[in-house]
Length: 447
Ligand SMILES: O=C(O)C1=C[C@@H](OP(=O)(O)O)[C@@H](O)[C@H](O)C1
Ligand SMILES: C=C(OP(=O)(O)O)C(=O)O
View 1: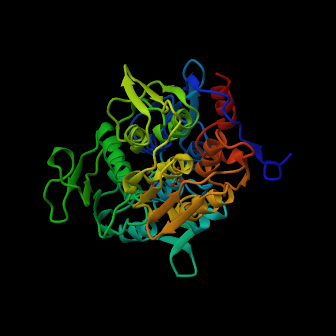
View 2 (view 1 turned 60 degrees about the vertical axis):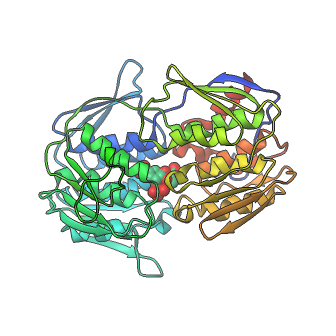
């Protein structure tokens, strides 16, 4: 039976929730730790990593380059990564994972042979040029396909020589923070490290760059956060960096406990807002670089009671069921937009989500997808230059398209809690970052 032909009936909520949901590990942290483990001087043990399509693709990429990755821990759910020399020729499937298609080429330049990267059909449309050009400027030889506008896209072949000169590079990362993260992550292994200046006018998803800097530092790498003219930035300076200098040097191995994925906690926390009652997420970090932490503020602004107590986040939906619309700039946390938009779709007042033009280059064009699917459900929404505007409207059931986008599938699931007859095409696409979303959703509702 193909899920493409048989859409998933999104369950409605029978009443208020009262449930604790154990959320799997962070995609962004897992894939960064995996990549750094491949460059480390000693083995790395990842405790509670994510096991999903995106992390499996990263593991497979490392294995293709000659890194040994084995299950470990009492239940075999941890991972031990044993680094070694990186070898080509190799073939890497990027699927639709931004972290794989952007980060792995920066590692592949260190292999001693050709590494070919390709991915899903949509992956061939996602922007890649700043990574390819940046690596070329740092000394790499890469052959890449080009889109109609002549920009580099997948598939591509990195002609690795076992080393990369590194040095100074300018990158316009206004399309994705991953262009910066990619070039910083493998930089400690480049001969001169990397001194990267962002030249674009905007920079989305800055917390994800902060995450890259934080994981590098955790592994013992020296990273300077700077302004364009070289003054200190980041940290306690209160100045946003636009230039990062990663010094060449060893990367430490060791044991790392992976935080739960706070963005993937989103649909479950949103369920408390949509259905009423309380959803609790344990192991919510007190301090984190995950942009998903912003959910605490966003859900409170929509009428939820949000309490972080003893490491567990408690979200309680509004007692009268009335969800407030939201006017928010999601530039830093675009990853949360489909989840937030689903709640806006159920809200009693209009919403405006701004600062997220770059979502057009995500798993699908998410602005177009949100508008199309909300309209299909009877709603009224409009795409703006940099976001979406959503008007309250009575909704009805419909078959919601997910466009191979895990977050559009969960968008449908959230709305389905309140709107009978919502069915989601290809709910299995949620496996990109959650191992068993439909099962977790049913279990949550059974409580
Ligand atoms: O580096 C990362 O792990 C990510 C960065 C962000 O990408 P963009 O900057 O393209 O939004 C985010 O949306 C994505 O889900 C994960
Ligand atoms: C944009 C996302 O993913 P990717 O890492 O593939 O860019 C996402 O998970 O919302």
